Amino acid sequence: MKTVKTLLALLPLLAVCSGLNGGIAFAADAKARPSAESVAPESTASKAGEAAGEAATAAEEKEHGLPQNAVEIGHVFGLPITNSMVVTWVVALGLIVSTRVAMRKMKEVPDGAQNFWEWLIEGLYEFLESILGPELVKKSFWFFITIFIFILFTNWFGLIPGVGTIGWGHQGTHGFVVDQPLLRGGNADLNMTFAMAAIFMVLWLIWALWSNGPWGFLMHIFGPKAEMAGVIKYFMIVIFFVVGILELVSIAFRPVSLSFRLFGNIFAGENLLEALANTVQHPAWAKAVFSALLPVPFYFLELLVGLVQAFVFMLLTAVFTVLICAHEEGEGHAAEQH
Image (cartoon, rainbow, N blue to C red; front, side, top):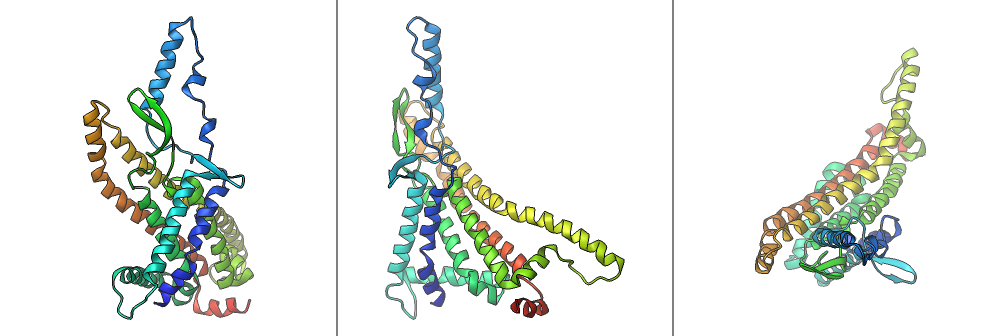
């Protein structure tokens, strides 16, 4: 129950992550995209120009799939609100409310929703304790469990029918074409995944300094990894200094790899489902039937992908943390003195 109360107290981190979603300049205003009419100027004398305009319109209507950039659907106090931000807010609010309701009347012998949350949190706590150790897991578990739950349910929310397919658009030759979806999968937006990776890197630095101290942190990266003497000692100092520079480059690229790995898998999965739903276009009855049936087997695959990607993000961040914070017994006493 202690771990459950910890999660309940720190679930507002979900709202922080989703709020940072809109603060990075990856989103673009869909209204700035030129329409088919502006690309193909109106020509009254040239039939070739009209044919080109019709071809451009047909190509636009034929193109289906999730746009690479999140779409602005409004502004609040001058700040842009994108469709992916709305999804993250809905997921965060849903998780906060559901956990509060589930734990409102806690029982000694849990059942129902309380049983599920306790099983999930206690299981992950034991798993992370085996990786991080008993001391580090007490300080960092709140982040890893929150990020896992948030990523998991955000991934699954993006699979709900209507996300990415309901919104504003125009009537095309073969049906309604959605230009600006009302909702977009939260982790299918690079803003969201990069925000979570950036938050982790700040916490990673805090945990590293807490565990090693400033001097121990520098020695962990640049210092020799073994006891040496004589001329070889100075030679290895230079070698390990160069290796430390390469380590810094690797650390700098960690938020990039974390964010693009999650974004790429979720973005590709949602586009796959969209492409399958639009595989059959004619006749109308076949489009209605196959747009619902073809994606069904892949929905189960995407449910698994959503779970795996949430687990991978949590596991990688935990491994990065233990790599910088883990040290031998003797080193721990030295770090505590800093």
